[in-house]
Length: 496
Image 1: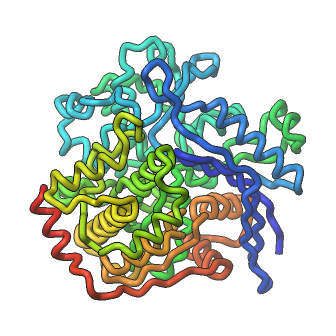
Image 2: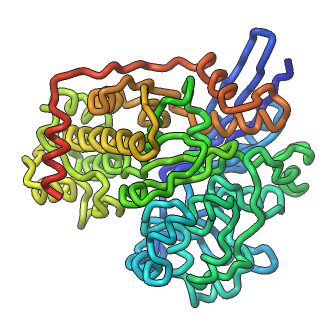
Image 3: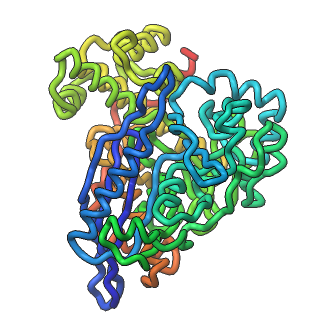
């Protein structure tokens, strides 16, 4: 049995982590151990009225984390996953052209409608299989048409590919993330050059595609020197969209499961063998993204715990609430389903500000829906969690109907799996058992793909998930009866 030690860089829109992991399979002594060696905050920065990512700062923190991994033991490979959609532009010398925009920047307002006049939504869905999100890469690039940066660019790299490029000097695009851009043909599994040309995006920008498990390249000599690392260590393409990695880390047994990757965003869906490109799927605004091993992540993006974290930030600024546990304890004691809102409303997308705090937006949505106004942080937190669980109920059921698939259990992974109240409400709302954990599913999926690429006996997703089950404890939540979730759903539907 060979023991492998790898580094997983797992980047979220609010924080980033570098993890050290040990993997060993066989001889009755399986190991899948992961520990955080470096964590750092991440947030968009307002520059000249635009929201940008400090990607050089992110890279500096990644190097700091990798340096710590190397300091504490040998390293066999590195893998990077992050949120999707955002990108950097390189010029012909391979230099970064400007600071990457955040998907929460307002420059894409109205661009989706502009593109739909050129490529009707029905046609775009038949090619890309993506739900209509106004900040998708295609709309960001259309918004950049005519800019000096886009005219000078020769390559567009999504953020994990950009960081991989800086580590190795090799440019490319990993498929699971490429499939989120709105420029990828989900049936042909290639860039849709024709679609790019129709909307005025130069096809020269689209880099070569690579598979999860491919070696991007060895760490460049200057980087190896800085990290005190052997230059032969490879950087391996994993499911570089963090949800793709998280789905690998779902400890499911069999195929009749739904997953919720719960964090800043909640990704609610099924794992399928083929995309669902029906008119009904498009009308329901479901998305088909490529997963590891040629699978399809048939899912719905839900606003997620972003809303609660932004409320908490606003309350802490005002000195109203000390911490998350306080509001969760209060929410658990608050009446269930008293107030529900459409948690996916666009007014919740932008960061909370003093002039427009997130709690006031939630209250305004409640008023607009004719719902009782939540008057305390505890009541407002319960409103958010009930509304999230109601969205999960709707999307799990819709996914099953659209894909003609049965769902026997819901797996909740990611940071939200640690929220006991949300997991129990999800079981109640869906009427299905919920298995919660692991919280580090994205990092684990990242690690598992690296380990297989290095020769570990993990031939398929079933073997990877079995290893997660053998090495990680899950919490089971059985559905309770009492609250009328169907009535709450009808109430919300009528309010729309």
